[in-house]
Length: 225
Image (cartoon, rainbow, N blue to C red):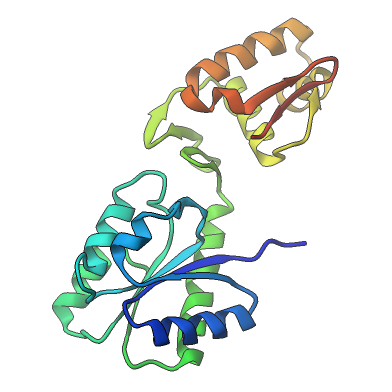
């Protein structure tokens, strides 16, 4: 079963939040809503696929919340759509400069909002196809880079290929022979010990995420919680 996309709605109008949540849930999304930016920051934002942010709220504004979200490497890739009664050119430009993916002025139709959400998520999914992400650990398949909490780390070709394989099928246990067949050239003689050494080096380089590469005694290695 394909997991539902999760959306967080942040708006200080409870009735509007209820309407949006009802209609998005009918479309198959999982939806949470909060009535202030401060309440949003109390949640674990990393689990959301998209955020709908009102701009003008009591206390912290939607712009300030977006600035916090985009400034955190763990959440910076989450798409944002602003919902606002303010439609001046300056506001629109500011929202886009903060990294917003779209800007929907109030009042809006639910049909229009759904179309905007679907379009943003399609674009986001096409970008994510080139990346493998686990919390703050990100592997960019196209650029051949790996970053840990926003800081790029250098991996050898072998370490990169090992991490890509383990991340691409999280939870699957790969035997040493399977890793050798997938990662090393066919004309190179590789011992099981070579696999262990490269896994050890990889663990050291990915910092706090090293504990996510598990050893299944007698079987091999896997990436998971």
